Amino acid sequence: MSAPTKEPIVNAPKPTSFHQRLIHALRGWRRRVVNRRRARADSRHLAGMSEHDLRDLGIGRSEVPGLLDEHRY
Image (cartoon, rainbow, N blue to C red; front, side, top):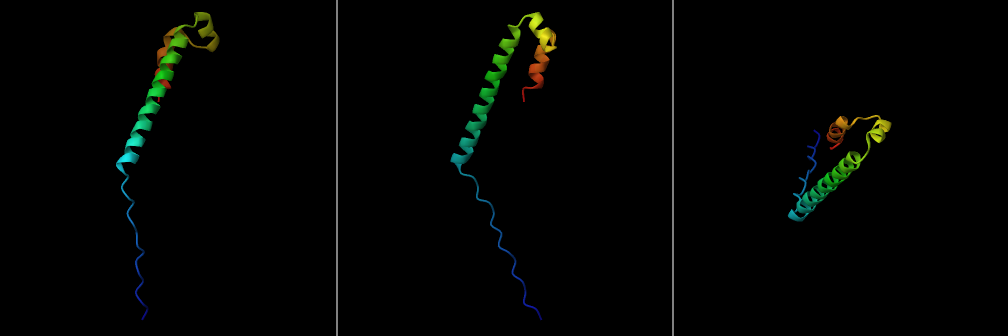
């Protein structure tokens, strides 16, 4: 008869420490703040452009809010 095979030992992943979860949350918060600031700056920049400049880009003034929302996330 053959000898019974041993089952491999599987270790469960260690739970992340509070410190790691906090760092992850803060990095996510910082990323969202940076993205919001960039979106506001883009919005101000496009709002300050003339109709002629916007037409050169191929967009109308009424399309600007939709374009900003489309590329937000």
